[in-house]
Length: 193
Image (cartoon, rainbow, N blue to C red):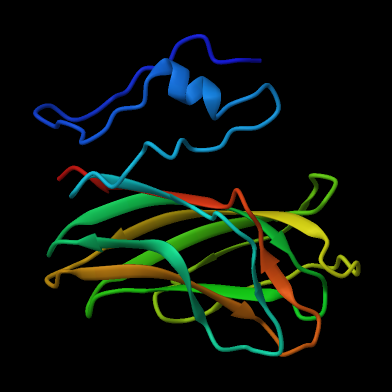
């Protein structure tokens, strides 16, 4: 299926620095996959789409590490909602964990779902993930088996402006690497007051 029409919805008075044309979007889309267009740049105070250009690996480490480019800035008292869609290579040793860092006093709630290589729901959870790791577990024994992790994000910056940053690591230190693959993406949008 190829998109026949795309409409850009934006708040009144907002102008985009760049706007994707139908040809641009069709060039990024085929009948089997959707990749967020590179033309979708940060719109100050409104939203952002980030995606990986190359695979990233972690092995023998439980230290939460920034996933480069998967961050957004916020003003004081701003609310954001978003979605992380990750293609991961993980197995039952070492599993993985994720968190977000954020400004002092900020709050965050995430709901996540992990699907196995056959598309079956393998695990799910809800967590206050700001600064604490949420463990994502799998019973898949195949090293580097491709999984799909979806995280729904809701956060509030309270009284302090700052940056929210996605972090990830192995849940238990192991020589089997975990990977975040190409076409992993995240989008966040400011929620109007």
